[in-house]
Length: 375
Image 1 (cartoon, rainbow, N blue to C red):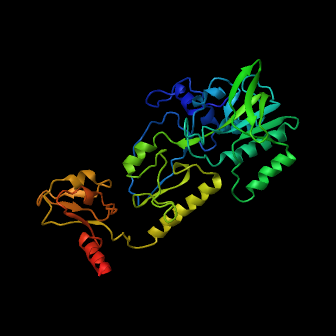
Image 2 (image 1 turned 90 degrees about the vertical axis):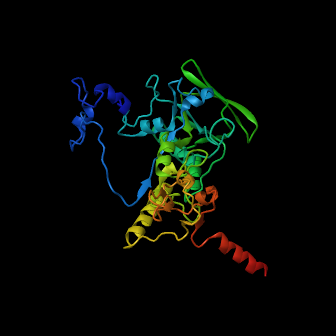
């Protein structure tokens, strides 16, 4: 039975979500809880919450960005998620590994790791973290299903750095006879009904040419396309790759730059399931700790305004990344919302009249400390 994606399902519904007569209704009929309403439209809800967890997930880097591998052009060059779907007993093929082009069982499968990862000149500079292990798992599952088949794994480095991971990889080499080839694949192109894979083994210095039935790309993980806009709305910083940034990589690994907003999952960086679960538990623990107190404890280093110096120019209001600044319409003096202020100091640097200071961290205190130290 073919799998119907969400984008395909829109063909059966109207512009406003109204149900059409030619709707296939396969998903609605199969749901035992009657939880699917094909005629439902978008709705808006307003809720008051104490904390927010940003678990935005990830997207796979598009195989079309790797034309040398034929991604998006050759039907028998697929990404790892598509291959995982083939291995799924509840998937479109009932768990049987077959070639998308003709439905034949592939006898030679080439797994290409770091496809789009660890390539700062053309693609992504970072490691996608989970590729080494899920490739080893997929190759072993393939060999269990096709014992007379051959699984080649092209890799740069094997990063099996967690408990029993190295043993899992070694077991695949010894028991399932997975063929690991150290080196980047140069090119993949069709020849007849096969795929020619050109690579080299950097350990032996030999150039290799493999005739494969199926090529599986371990594509790089990248942030969701909507993350930049969402991070702007939530006043959460992102890094150069558009992953959500934590406050401190060691001291505050699940806390964002905005108090009350926590991070979890691959929205922060590529992760495997173990790391994602650990981070989710850490975020939930932080939230429970905060909710267990009757009062909210705020950081004492927040901004204050010298009312006798403030000219009411409003520069601090425009530059505050957290919206903690407001203008008093009566006094025409800038005021600070202490519950929202994060003490970043942006207003202090921007104020032309030096009317902004941090509580308990004023310039006068620093001068006194310097004088006491020098004396």
